[in-house]
Image: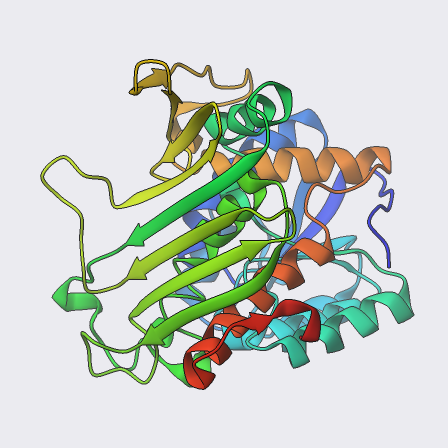
Length: 358
């Protein structure tokens, strides 16, 4: 299956889905990439006119390039790549249609709502020989990149890790009709918000998860999706790690809602708020010390809050322009979904799940 493909620059990009993540995270990244000659947004698609206007007006896109139906955008042609940024349950449909049109696909997480759907995507990717990748954005902030560099360089073998993702929902987001809160739309705290902590933790451990144990439940809200989950993971290299997530609980009083940390026999590293800051634990004095990390030269203030997306798109589009391997492959995307599906199965069956069986 392809992990590299060369595209002529500027890469002609179509957006499927022009909602919040496209407006807040994707567009600031493209406003950095476009002047470099890497990309050009040449068409957009969204069923809501307000979303089309929000992006189309900002990039001065002509009306004939704005589509209420994404199939019309694909049929018009002229695209090298599409970005799928729609609710989870629509990812498979939009991805399959784009791959069938021989267009490279970058999808927001997750691949799909099940491994069965994910494997159908991968089968089509392989059959059509078209590149496919998924956004794992929080690996690409400056602090996350520095953490990976330090772990590869001088911290030794990782033996233990933990991550925490606590998002106490406000009353205006406790809406049973909101897609993130619905099972049929692929919602739930594990697949939605905690998805990021899972890939961050596995990447920092540096070894794939092999066994999953967990409890995935609904405790706080009247949803048909999980709002709390606790996972115990065993990695191929023997390391163990834990994941804690909830939509009902929140950290406070000096604690952090989002952390991801790993420990070796010597030291440890902790990413806070999904890579906004980085700390190192020194076993010699049992103290945590913040590591100051400079932003890359291309970063601008309006893109910094979504620095992970900017870093991800920068590395991915450079790889596509040069014909080198993309930073997030289909294997990593499927593995993250397998961990989630394995955790749900472990909770239902009350036993550890071997991911090699999924």
